[in-house]
Length: 364
Image (cartoon, rainbow, N blue to C red):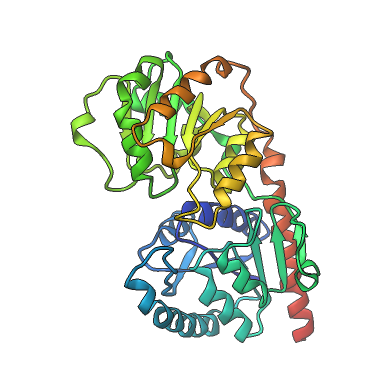
């Protein structure tokens, strides 16, 4: 009988894409897969697009600002744990792999209640809130990088694996996307991408400096659902899109320069493709500060300029940073080695399968 493995993690592509990279390796090992996530969500869309069946579980996250939703959040979490417990009882996976975010909390707790091994993965320098909660219930904690100062109980569970890269990262077809959009061969391409939901602040800053940016670049702007500006649809040298699914890898390959946030998944993809970048990390006022740490570390090993979120309101710092990096463009492009792209996800999948097999042996 094939092993059955549950996958969870959501709320953003930064959580879902690495989870699906591991899922692809599990599928190659002929495991049966089920994705635990919210109905009508990004994880539901991406999992369904990848051909993985969804088991719907409600979830809610804590807002980092004052919000009425924080009052009802504990009730939603309790409802989510109960729904996940029931779904886990129906599905009976041999192991659950979690990529984090608040979506994963009720699923991870439900796995623990059913005595199903739980493996979690952390992309950033420090554990996020969801993974801090789930680390207590987890059998194994995969880390993208070695994290000093972990408590002894957590160090015993930890395995440093690296960050799984999207499964199709080595398969980019930039010229197909260029032809589809009608992007000319010159000037260089500037890709603006701030995650699956986009960033209003970055969108506004880019659009305020659009005349300056289009003097130097063909600007391909992935602005997030509902963020298109019809008034700019006829601007020469500017292409705006809400979101890309299968074409996202093509866009990354097409780009000569990228403006983006500093999520760990985004930086891992840019580094694998050797893309110069202008990074605008989320400030600590709306996050736990992980993107500030990510950007600082990345700036020491890659070609990039970091622009503080609070300093880019009129967009001028973004324009100046892009102009500063013009001289870094046009070098030899490095295409990622397919084996290197799959290595981390394959390692995590193999270890996850090992947990499932151990559980089956103990069950017998």
